Figure 1 (tube, rainbow, N blue to C red):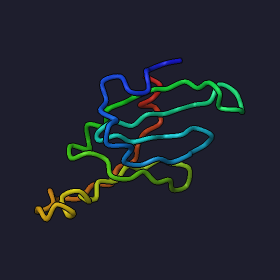
Figure 2 (figure 1 turned 60 degrees about the horizontal axis):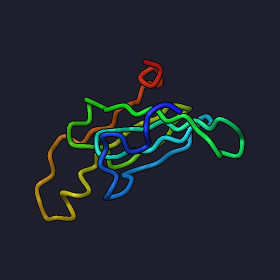
Figure 3 (figure 1 turned 45 degrees about the vertical axis):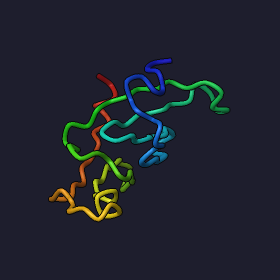
Figure 4 (figure 1 turned 90 degrees about the horizontal axis):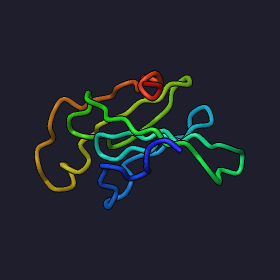
Length: 102
């Protein structure tokens, strides 16, 4: 149900982060975060909602959870690994759950 898991998102390089928060799985791909909510306890079917995070202009490199809230981080890991200057400042933003209800 919902969005296609890969609609308009390049998933070829793999997920940049994943986190389970309040029974939903959140998966990050570059500037996008998908919320995957199981339709039943077996996870045989799920509803996917994809949203772009405009505050993460350099992409998401990790997802984490604190006190029930989801956070997206941009730590510039790829830039470091390529020997390039990171795009500062590093970002850590709270992902508002309401974003997925729109």
